[in-house]
Length: 359
Image (cartoon, rainbow, N blue to C red; front, side, top):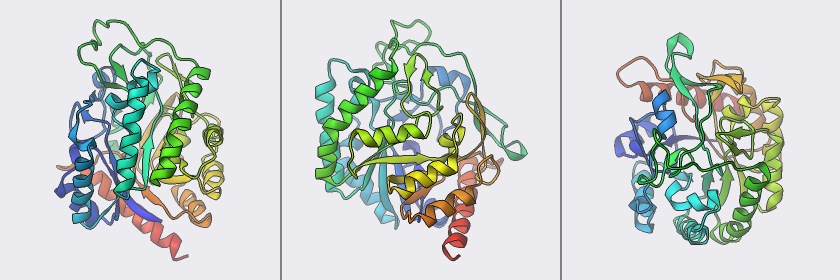
């Protein structure tokens, strides 16, 4: 198994890459949905949760062949491997998610991106096929010793304003959270599955041609519905339905241990065993939590409801040899809270992997 670090857009610089290498990571997963509205961490205020993570721009140069080439070169220059890109920009596929008038045009752009990714030798594109996206988490001193982390406490769910999808703004002219000019409207369960099935049917031949896995992230928070939009994977069994839609080795899972642990009625160890034994996990997010939907908090990797050593042992025993990243983590009380939190998680993971692999 390989140790990686996931980096959001504001952290894509040589200094953070050197930090990753110094902390023991060998691989990088880059999260590229667009520019976040605030800061360098994923800590979310209540106001930000309602107004979205930020603005997604369709002409973002990082998504061009040259931008992706330069991104990979910057990562390689620091002795690291670019393992995966995570999440298409909402501005590139909002009508794929919403089944809108520009769907066909946007699908062609996604196919071009996938071919560009394959030409660069990047193995995986992770994605979250969701209208509401990640929404509703708030910040608090929830983790050990009062460390700042995020939680979900069953908030009221306003409808999704027009101009927003995946909790990001793709049309600033239409988006107004205070005085919405319409809403996205309700999306039922059968409809969201129909949209995913169509997406996979069109994308999978391109993924196979390009040699790039499309890896689905489960819904977080894992509720059957969020803000009027049905969700796809809010129980581990739903992963199998995704895999059955297109029985290709390029149709894979982005296995988020924290999200699966949050799921009502889920056995996270059985899910890890089932899908790693089948060889369908592209890479792993490792994050610990306490509680389940609709009430949970994120914790340090060694301090939640899930026995992470047991999870890693299952992965090892089933021959998983992919990348594991610590996902997000509580912020330590110091001058560099994100870096300290990630250094703690990476150090714990490196020690745990070494102990397991040496038997």
